[in-house]
Image (tube, rainbow, N blue to C red):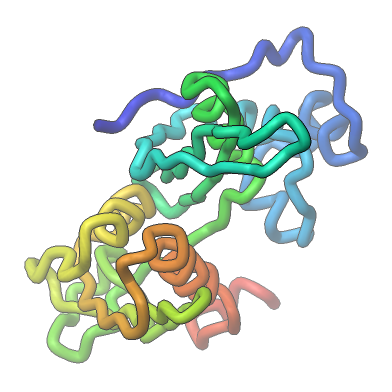
Length: 214
C-alpha cells in the first residue's frame, strides 16, 4: 500500500551543497530545471521541496548477516519504490538493526536517486498521442536479469511481473509490454533492471524534442 513520504523540516534544513542552497533560496523551483542543468541530487531535502507529493511502498524486507569479531551481526534490509505517479520514480535500499530505521534509510536513499521518466504513445497500434505508455522500446540490465519494456496500445494495461508492475505504476505508466530474461527471482536485480530501463527513456533526444531545444 502506498504511503506518504515523510518530509523533512525545510526551515531547519541547512544545505551542504550549492544546489541545495539554490533550492532553499528559491532560485531553483522546478525539478525539470534541475535535470535540464544536469545537476545531481545530493540532499534528500531537495526532493522534499521540489516534489512534495511523492509516495513510497516497501516491496521487500530481508535479513542480512555480517561476520564480526563478536559473532554474526544480523540486520534488516529494506527495498522501497518511490514515485509521484506522474513521470518521476526511484528505488532505495536501507539496512539497520531496527526495521523502522531501515525503512527511513531506504526512503532517504530513494530520494537521492529520483529519475525522470519519458512517457508517450510509441505503439503503432495506437495513435491517441497521450502519455500513457513509452515513446519507444527500452531495456535495462542488472546482474543476470534483463528487462525489456515495449510501448503498448491504450487499454492494454501493465503486462509485467509483481515488483516491476509496482515500479511502472509509480512512474505513471499505464500500458506497457515487458519481457525479461535471466534470474528474475532476485528481487533487487529484477527491479534495478526495470529502473535502468526507465532511466534509458531519456538516453537520446527524439524529433519531438528538437523544437524545445532551439
